[in-house]
Image (tube, rainbow, N blue to C red):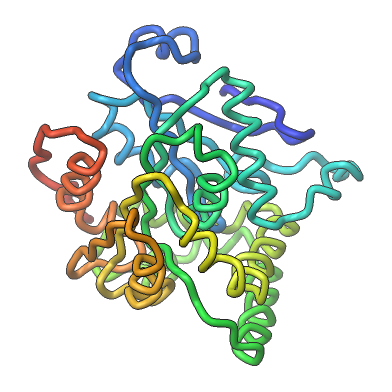
Length: 300
């Protein structure tokens, strides 16, 4: 499995591509542009794999696990310099820049989801010259509510603190775990992967990003970050998303004429898996890939 050390943390990554050189050397070298995928909170590269495979005819797709998640787990004991990085989302944006430097990739397209989309927005404004176009899936801006945020943080602390590995062995727990995130069913393998990633994420990273992604600072600064985007951006919302409702996406889109906002009907927080065909057609059209996609993955 390929890893690259970024600021003292081994980062897992993989290429999804039809390019022969990538399949052998694990390095960019084809004529295709690179499309980088960022996952959301407590996720990993795994839930992007089917989307990347569908787009690999025109892109060399690069997936990696964010620091503290998936297979990019923190070294133990955590060195002081790694602990000192903290879990502010802009530090994850800097991780991405260093990751691309390590692979000698000067410019990319971005496709990010949920918390990964917030990281992507920060990256767009700090490293705009490195991105041609960006897709933000399930993203938006919210207003600060001190009471609600404190309640969310308390609940988040409980959820992150109680993650016994035996949960994955309970029959039907994958459906229960994903119920709040979905409008339509997705494959069982995907549901289990989400649960496994949640259970294995590093405690420090999982809790730290809960505090930074939903915070007074984020509520105050992210609207301006969206307003400052100078890269053509597609923001996709799921009609019934309970995690980041459509209204939050609309609030972000009105801040900047470069942001195109699209709502996928009858989906929630994972429209790329709930309505694969619609999602891929939107992304292909926005990124300049015209081949239509036929047939969606069958949920089980």
